[in-house]
Image (tube, rainbow, N blue to C red; front, side, top):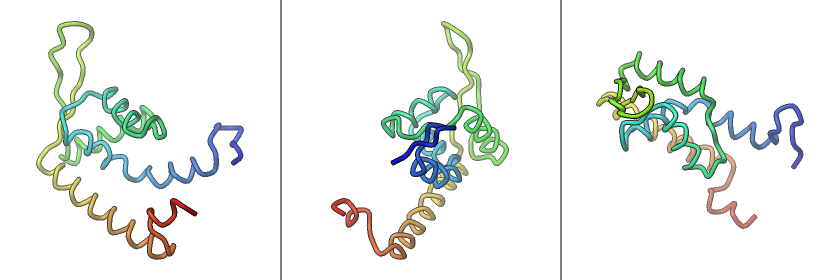
Length: 128
């Protein structure tokens, strides 16, 4: 596989990133379903969940936080840190939980259609 010298990414990396890009809000909601979190913590949880294979840029995450708040899917509050600077925490709302469930169902349905159109399932392609 060849690397794109300008970005250091392979063509496969760019393709995977394009597939995930439209799901940033759902990914963030998935993190917030577990616990309230602050901005950088959300970044780390996403990165660590993929073993470092996928990282969302800070600007992309903060745009997502603003969208989620504007749409009533998440809300923000200031933490009460005793050491260091105050952190802005995000929490999912009931509407956010409903949107997350709906988006995951849409993703599963889409994945099923793509798998059938490609004539394979993820399990079937492991050995090929």
